[in-house]
Amino acid sequence: MSTPTSTTAGPAGVELTGLVKSWRSATGPVHAVRGVDVSIARGETVALLGPNGAGKSTTIDMLLGLAAPDAGTVSVFGMSPTEAIDAGAVGAMLQTGALVRDLTVRELVTMMASLFPAPMVVDDVLELAGIEEIAAQRTNRLSGGQTQRVRAAVALVSDPDLLVLDEPTVAMDVEGRHAFWTTMRAFAARGKTIVFATHYLEEADAYADRAVLMARGRIVADGPTTEIKAMVGARTIRATLPDVDLAALGALPGVVTADRHGDAVILSCSDSDAAIRALLDGHSDVRDVEISGAGLEQAFLQLTGGEEDGWGDDPRAEGARREESIR
Amino acid sequence: MTATYLRFELLRTFRNGRFSIFSLIFPLVLYFVIAGPNKGETDFEGIGLSAPLYYMIGLASFGAMMATLSCGARIAGERSVGWNRQLRITPLSARAYLGAKVLTAYVMALLSIVLLYASGFVLGVRIPAGDWLQMTLLILLGLVPFAALGIVIGHLMTVDSIGPVMGGVTSLLALLGGTWFPITSGFMYDLARCLPSYWLVQASHVGVGGDGWGARGWIVIAVWAVVLSLLAARVYRRDTARV
Image (tube, rainbow over all chains, first blue to last red):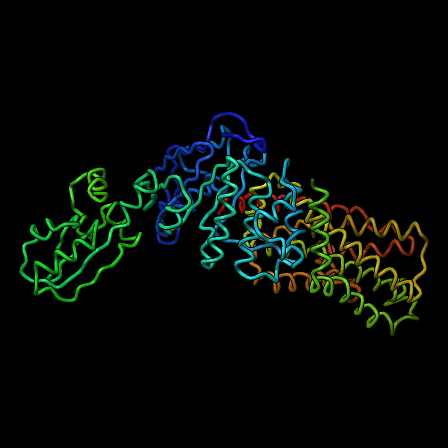
């Protein structure tokens, strides 16, 4: 998978093995990451998907050597994170961060390029990141979206074999997101390995080969994005429907599980269109119908056995549930 | 690779207007305000130096001290926008990073010193070339503790708190160092002689043929330099360990 621009050799990709990390906080220890194993092949684009607080950023910090794991190891192309960074093999766009001021965009990119052993040509980076027009502007006079694009250029300037993006598009509008991912796709096409954290399912679906789902510091699923999308893309129907047989509701087409909270029923659906038709046809007394996309947060709660939802004490294995959702 | 980085560090510093005003222009204006009216005094406060010479070195020290300490403000600023983390995922070493900060601080300090010398010359300060040189070298050496202190403060303070802290520290050190008036006796004197800022100002004695620093001066500067450098290394490492 390596390209002529590669600064690393060999088949090894990125290996995270048994990563554990806790923080001390005023309210006691925070177990940010509780045992993460991920193996990423060279040239793969992997989304680290999960709600806020899932441990994505902490995992990325360990991947980049910015945080030392309490347990476990990180290997980047067969090297430690520090060795990989010194070899110029790693570029990253961190979650938070702005640019230093009092330089033009071109000067900033040139300055960063000078730190690496085999950087890209500055003009090429400016073009790749789509910032040629603002190259002469001072970094402290950019809009939020422009700043993000310059940060992307800073991440790309070393021509890294591994590019790490921690929620890169959070501050961007739709157009900005599109332009950003066009850049990243062009970069991935050069045989580069990309790992990005996001809490947008659509983003993982559109740009990653594979998604790793994290919740509460653990990996709850890892697979092709199509599979993951089916698993967490479910919708929920809520309606007021007293004295109904739950088992009958559960058997309706498109319904995965049925649950009751007082007079309300909650149907988790793999096909909410079919389910709502069947529900309305069969129950003329149904009221207050709401259909909502199961947000990622909710989907994760289900996957990890959150108490608030009907799947909380579901004894079925994750694999079986996944199969059912796909169907 | 580090040369380019250093060049842009310097460029950024020169372009920072607020910084230039405070560490370059401010001491210059003060000098003319304070020493100008006392231009004719050849034995200022009975210490055997002319007022323009005394204040030239006093304010050159003050400006240089502020310029050197300001590397802390720049570090705090970079930390506040997460730039230190961005730099840590480059091959730039800690030594090169801190080295560039200190070197930039020294360039600004030297500039401040040269501006004050030129002003002193305008107000009639005339001393042998060798003394100018020796004085300057002493000041530059005396700045080592301040560069280390800047690094310490830059890692401990946030960008909001660093302004008042820097202002307080420089004012106090300048006052006790004898920037504003000579300190020659009493408790203030005993205290001042333990501070690096006092010895910065004492570099002016070279201007009348003195040694500048006696053994005590060298020891005070050396102790402060070592202690603050160790502290700087410590806070830097602690900052690296944290996310």
